[in-house]
Image (cartoon, rainbow, N blue to C red; front, side, top):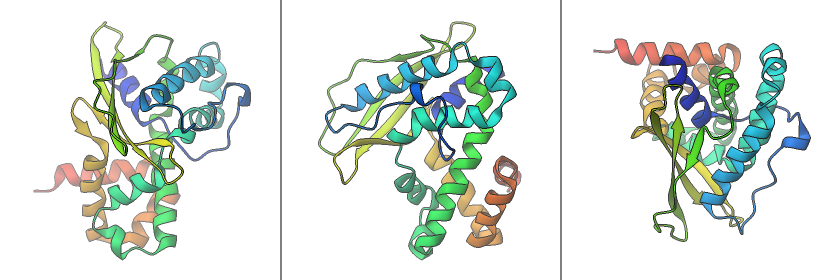
Length: 223
């Protein structure tokens, strides 16, 4: 069950910040004419093409796996906006350089942490649910279900917003009702109050996913 949940989490958090590989399988650039639902469908289709038949190769070459994730997800994810939301109130005090470094280091850490969970992905694992008709001009939610090994499903929803160029980009992922932005914002807030934003960024840059584990443990242990 834990492995299945890891798959759902990996699909949701699949990420960012690595050099693209398997270019023939990379997702096309975000298109202003694509609806958010179409964007998610493109992601699921491209993910199956990139992963299926390459599992062993990707298992043996972690950087190629990271590159696949980058090629599939990165064109459709607004990491700069999401990082501001994760920083919360600290984003106002951070310099542009700090925000940029944090965005890169944080999402790189997340990608490395959840990458291997995608090796269990096969076509049909993600079901994109029909639109509920709640699309507005700026924001919307796309609802999906991830099928687990035992046949049960996990609700994974994607929050979208239009960027300045008019393209729909995802910025938040909600797994079973839990927003990753809210979850990590609490952890980041606690860590910044403890060590400061510069040290947090340095920890993420040098320790990667281990720094995320430290933050999560610190939050759980807090009174």
